[in-house]
Image (cartoon, rainbow, N blue to C red; front, side):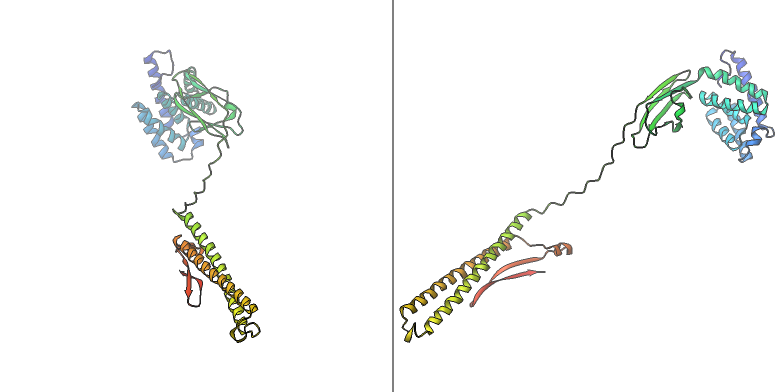
Length: 349
C-alpha cells in the first residue's frame, strides 16, 4: 500500500495504515449513519457483502480485485467509510488522481457529518498525494462545436488550458466536431508530478461522402455494329430496288398499251401495214419496253443484293424482343414469278 506520509519511517507508516484500515472497516460495518444512511437506495445486503469482500482482498493486497467490489458497494449504498476504503485501494494501485479525488469527496462528507477522525484521515492522504499528482493540459484552437474527450470522458470547455490531474499511464485524447474530421492522439503520463501539454490543432472539414458511380453500360456483342450497318445498307439497297422495279413495271404497262393502241388504229396501221407515224408509235413503245426490261432487271438485282446484306448481318432484335428476352428474326427475300417480281418478309416472331 502506498504510504500516507512520504517522509515517515516505513514501520510507522504501515502501522498508521493498518490502524486506519481497522477504523474504516469498523466504521463501515456499524449501523448506517450520515452519508451512508442518506444515500441508501440500492441493495443494502449486497452492498455490505461486497464491502466485506473488498476489505478482505485489500488485506490480502489483492487491490486490483478489491477496488471494483468496493466501487460497486459504494454505488449501491454510498457511505463515507466505503469511499475512504475505495480511495485507499486506488492509492495502492497507483491511481493517484482517482484516489486524490475520492479523498477530497470523503473530506467534504466528513466535515458535513462532523466526523473529525475521518476528516483528518482524508486530509492527511490529500496532502501526501498532491505533490505527486501528474497532470495534462489541453490547449485547442477554436473550432465551432468542438468536443474533447479523454479516455471517452467529455472535457468541458472551461477546463481547456488548465492542468488537470490524471492517473499515470497511457491515455487517448480525441477531438471532434460536427462536419469535421476526428483528431486523436495517445499520451503517456509519468508516475509522479508529470505534466503533459497537448496542443489540439484546428480540425479539418470532413471530406464529402463518396457517391456510388453508376455501373457502365454493357458493351455490345462483338460484331453488333457491323451487323447493324449491313442490315441498314441491305434495307436501303432493297428499297431502291423496289423503286426501280416499280418504274420498270410502269414503263412496261405504258409500252404494252402504246403498241396495242397503234396496232388497233386503222389510220396508223391499216391492214397490219403501219404508216410511218404508226411505226414511230410502235418504236416508242419498244423503247418503253426496253426501259421496263432494264428497270425490272435492275430492281430485282437490287432486291437480291439487299436481301443478301440483311441475311448476312445476323438476327435482328426489336425492343419487344429484348423485353421478352428472345430474338425476333426477320429476312427480306425477293419473290420471282412468271408474271413479275416483288419483295417479301420471312421470319420468326
